[in-house]
Length: 372
Image 1 (tube, helix red, strand yellow):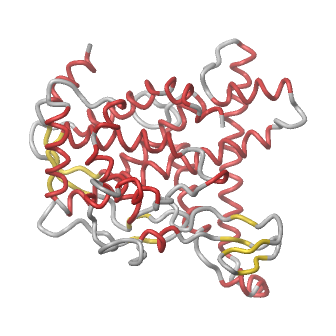
Image 2: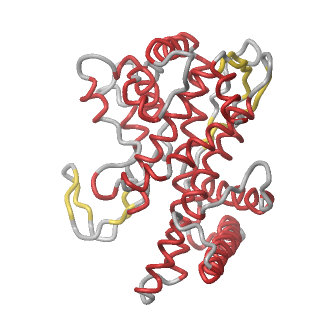
């Protein structure tokens, strides 16, 4: 997709940096202070995707649509919870007639709200286009241009569907991964210390990590890979249907069969991974690193892989690098951060990440630049 091309991703770098910097400033305190990271990661991801899609922020200061955005986010979370779980009526359709089809009502209600939310975005952009005040770098600007030249294909319904897919996939990929990455780092302080040492050695405290630095931070990349291995954003990937009869691993798959790939099981297969349930970023370093990385499929593979993979990796890499560089982190209390999860399309934590953080010297420079 054009929105995820290298040119467009580079053009949206300013959005990503601005939102990540806002997160860092929001965390700032003179000494160790308790913070709840989960909602902050959600807001960060939502704002980045919305600025790419619609050219506007939905959370934070001077934002007028905060309540509407929160309602939309809650509904999308509910869709994720319901959509990724098995229901009795999937196997016994008759049960929906005797009161077991409630989840369909939830999905229908969510669909109505989501459709209204995105339709308002489309109408707002269309009106701005008429008045000549549209954000021309946004995805909606491009889609509405295509609608003028190809109205039979780029209908409002098609445009809304594309936007919803991007919102659903783009928000969860980054926020869920950041949530789990910080959980693992807090529970493994020795890993956090190594990541901080790498950044201090290669970048220092005189400037902040840039997106172009991430490729040279091998241990940081190993942490991200290990997080994807243990906590893939969509553990069953996305559902596909076979378009024709085929054979997979010796099994005959008829046309029209629903196909699921259990990425979570593949990532924890003891035949492929040593000590598969342990958080060990070192497995992605040294000899065999490329082979290990190629065994990861958090975004799928081939033509049907998630098109937002590169954007998600850029957001996660820069955000995590800056969080480690700019703040000291420690657990809130003596117990490990709770890792209890609940299923859905994405695997979320039952309890949000609560931690303690204190700014490091480089934050003074970042704050000074943000005030200029």
